[in-house]
Length: 294
View 1 (cartoon, rainbow, N blue to C red):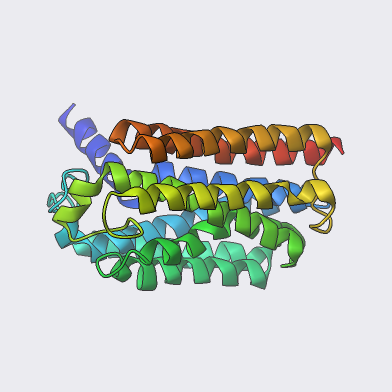
View 2 (tube, helix red, strand yellow):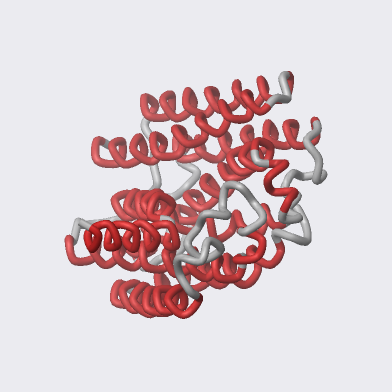
């Protein structure tokens, strides 16, 4: 029983280091992009994309936590992670980070070189630019939105080998989505983030600037997500019924962003977080199903 418990704790800590839940959402986005762009479904390609995407994200998360051991120890939500809690040493974390970086890059390179390049860019931006910038400026959210938006387009590029208006549109949707999502998270976690010197809201404070900016970016997100319905995004199309579903999802997020602006509370911010969590995968599912039906 003791051995089994130790194995369970070790596996759980590896999962925390690599952020399995976040990795799943990233892989889901990449898979959706692949299904949208593929001329023909090739299982081996799909497996390489899932494996490569998961490995790149896991490596990025591990390197992020290595760099943030000291600040993670200051925040309630992160102080029990394996590195700051002392359950894992840096050498083990580096082993996972480096091994997964090599595995992820190789897997994506087997698909095509552009996919591997985007994977590497995503990892470098997240680790070398976003992570150190978090303690310096709220602009870190903008910087972090670039690697955060790559998974959706990564799938398209993996399927087609091409970065055009279609991949750019998928990138833009996920890029804009991140602002209401992460600003709401920063609002709820404001006091905890402040312990580590992180001030990620637009004006560094919990005020109307943050809630107003969330509304603006949500409007842009809705606008971009509807472009395929008007034939403005190349081969990426959206039928009228699917467009209405996408619009309805966007309005749902917008209503909660407006509610948060009028009622600037943590509970309103949590509702906005949940709406964005629901919005993105449902949008991707709607896009994919519509692509097969058109």
